[in-house]
Image 1 (cartoon, helix red, strand yellow):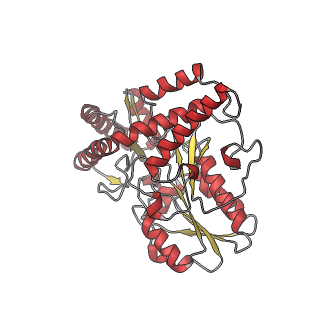
Image 2 (tube, rainbow, N blue to C red):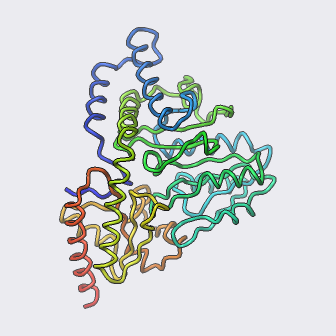
Image 3 (cartoon, helix red, strand yellow):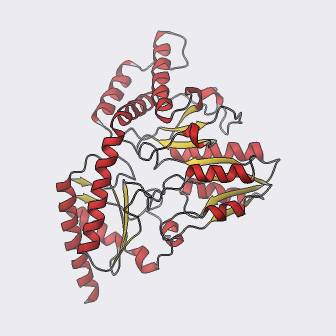
Length: 384
């Protein structure tokens, strides 16, 4: 099997699976219990939180565990908007955000808020000038993703925060960091952003666990109430095996980050250049330089249907996707690809390849060979 859908989810590392199994067998106490088992479980959560805080260069009390990136985005955005609503009702985001952000924005638009959606260029980058001109006295929040989940464009988070601070220091900033966490350099302290969301299953950790950084200067009201777990921000009995597995995934990732990132970048660059040279009538929707994630490559094949190509590859045990896994089963065309100016024909012929440290150069050569054969065969059938 050649798995090239690592943006959708990743295979957990063996060490992560092992430590989660041990946790379920041995550390099954409720972290809120006062007896020895409960205190041991609470200690394991503290350790995992410490690994993540150290990696992000923040304080442990600024890290909150959630069920995943979607919940993290919802908690941050809704809590900030609820807190700031008396100051204004204007929010800024982009046209290429993840559905977990865009659907929140639609909700607020239906509740008397005004949302500005920033445009992007052909490779998915915003204009800092447009951002500057969009910030107003009543702008309460700017929410911009770090790395786009479909095309891999990296937004200039440091510059974005600088512009916000210059124009309206009272405006808060949230970053959807799900595709950037563990893959793109960032120091949250240096960035000055107010909140940053991330997820376990994108970094070879378990599903059903995510995280949220919130700068400790903020006191916000939760959107879920209960037993005051996670210092009251996210109540509910903690997902202990998930948290322990997440912490272990981050611990390992921190050691291997540079090595794996450089390796994966070579795979992406090699894949993109070979496809450009060997397959006609295509469009690379992801740049092959350091301005995009080394883990993501989005390609449009004209006169080919992406879904058909996906299944051709699947028949050869090669797994890719056509768009974000969170919306790939829908009938609507990708809002991201529309926003970068692709024609319908190009959108319909698009696949997304997402790499990991597990892929070998032999895997890549085989995948490209099968891709070439598949594209040729599909086009011959269509042209008959």
